[in-house]
Length: 427
Image (cartoon, rainbow, N blue to C red; front, top):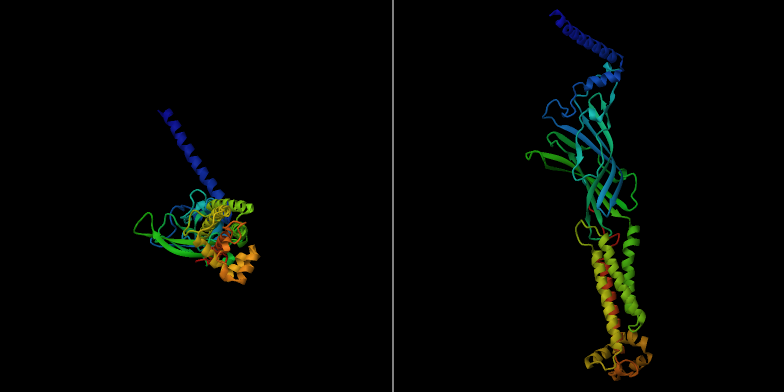
């Protein structure tokens, strides 16, 4: 029986010796470490990074939040706003305080982010899966328990566009920050300092101008408890395209199409060039509308006035094409026009405008005849039998169409054509 008890006793003594040796080694290692290591071990001893660091659970944790944008980009295809920025937060941790006199006058201590509690201030309106950030960054803790934390992040969100004066449309790209798991009774989120446009984005965007940047505060219902609220900070980035890009890419083609339409109506209706130009003009309008369909933002509010301008111009181009075909057919007719058409045409030709604009350009002889005796020109339309009896009717219709189209384009330019000065950004 003694022989059986001896191995058990030997095993117990072995364990006791191992524990004593381990304690001696730990004591020795702690004594040989620097003051910074001792301070860090004392502060983090039994520290729980999942518990909000307050002495009384009813106390709020004030978190000062600061955003320092570095670069932004708006992708039109996906209609997403991408912001590269520095994020800084500061709060007080009552569990991380010490007396500097006991630790070689150490006033600041670097700590890894995963070792202490960090407020879960996240973006609440992000484009899921595209934002990049990490809480695994180094923090700096002061002797009073003030924790300062800094990280680089990329946030991706959507923008709300006012498309009234597209392509000078205004983009309101908003990024909302707030605590993910704490209510407003636990975390009070405050703006570290007022944001000004002059000190925001360091790297300029090649396509978009930052017109304004402002921050709003608002409250929302706490998602885990309907009886509580959570406080949010919303950063609003107001963007608009560079005017040079807009002028070359978006505004020049409609002006060119307008000039081509007016040129089509200016040419003689019987000319082959007018028919070719009218067809090309109509096709170019269709291509312009198709291109605009891909360029206009799919989100936002208000229909672009530029779309109405192109749509109206397409209608005028179709009218010019149809009118050209009709006038070419009229000039091929050999029958006399009806009396009411002849009478109306003659009355207009008797007027001063008719003499200057219509007859004098095409038939100086007829002009001289009108000037000698205006009362004898009742048959002016039929005066030249060798030419088409519809000749002056066609000229009159062509000039009326040209002047009406010119007036329509002037009205469209005044009411629907966007300019740099027609747009005012909102805040």
